Length: 106
Length: 119
Image 1 (cartoon, rainbow over the protein chains, first blue to last red):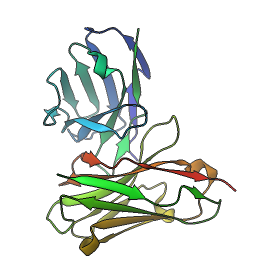
Image 2 (image 1 turned 90 degrees about the vertical axis):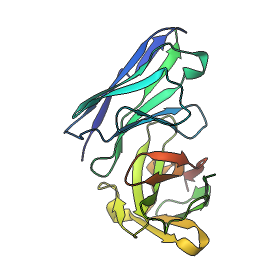
Image 3 (image 1 turned 45 degrees about the horizontal axis):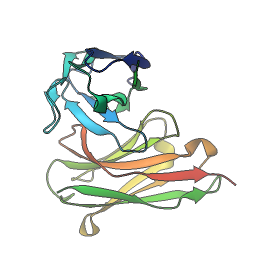
């Protein structure tokens, strides 16, 4: 199984901050990686697919990068609506999610 | 517009078999490249991928749960059914179904259904 490790588990930030979340795969997954945002009581919402492709309708302050085993999700200027939990997902071999990163207000 | 909705029991007893149905609209599971998957999330914990079925009836299961899962589709009814045997309290979770295309990420999700395993 491919393991996905996100860091940090929790991130405290303020509106306007640049935020970066990292996801590491236990083996190479090329660029078969997605990022999701999830708010309490709601289903996840896709932000990024194929490591760096922005899903239609997602604000451009979200961006993804990386390939192989190391990936990042960046929010260029954190907005009030962005406080949520973020998950990475590999879909190179079966599929696995990371353990999540909660972005909370500092 | 694509929508998905999960249905099934909210409470099951340990050792019982869980059967969940995903009813969808806005796409067809007979269209090339389309797939429907199941994902679960225990309260306060991370997402866990369970299984996926594709338009060509290709099925893939989480290796750790493979022996307990079965996924099937009924194209005429626009439904996907997931069964999980030998339920245990640790299987208590919100279960989601989701749409994907060409083995990509899940772009549309159902609202989820909470299943509690308790005697």
